[in-house]
Length: 373
Image (cartoon, rainbow, N blue to C red; front, top):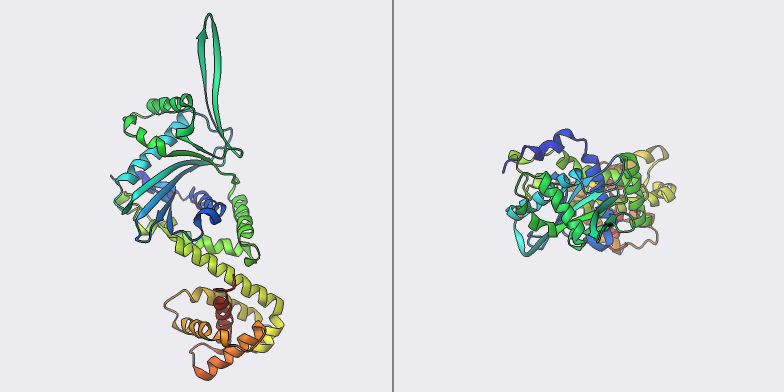
């Protein structure tokens, strides 16, 4: 079904930073328990604000998690028209996932999250006649720092009824067609800051906590990961139809893992360079006034190693991978010097001398990083 609203987020561009930041926060907050080593892709402003699709070895969808991510300027979320509108949209996404043609494994299932960095106060006051008196009781469930994930099916039936009553009043569409998706509905509080700048600072702290000393510049690391989202930010849903299998709207787990690998490997190389730039420069013939250019070239080399179009960088990387274990030196700069000399004796390159040495330096750290974690 054509839905003109599926491109509204792309046209406005306003909410993309929040969705991107929130998606990264979810990944980092659950990195060890859920995302590290898992095959998945994520999409933003596509079917839902945030979508994670977990895949089996054959590329079939095992599970999908969607997140309708909303912030609130003041107060907490209550059972009312605003919440009903959001829940109806979420349930419709569940129906769309079922009918989506993306290959699914036989045990496929999905979770539909309403997520917010604002507290949700789900409550219903019930008044009953007891003899000649009225007695009131409030049924309440908070979704906050203390109870961050609440499943709809586990709510008190009184609260469930209060929610479905609001859905029926809000939605002119036959709500009964959506109610079987309520079993997949979850409410999630995410302890995430309000402004983009604060969110980025929080993400940098997460990176530092997870990767510890493997990342020396968390700001640069975050910017590298952000670049992965540029393509999906600008891609329109084709024919205004949101499809799970639309590659232009996907960021692959492999790309995220590669970015993290480059970041951590670069950090080791930068840290060694900062600690030993005089010794390394002397061994490799890098003059003091050339150090800045040399640093820029070895930094760029890590990205070029990933490009199949950069044959020279690929050749140097393969040479180092094949030879670094045979080095006789007992320090990194000795080994890099030895490898550079061996390469010049046995091979040739179209790269200028400084670029060759900078690439050799990066290739050494790229190679040893595979076994030195």
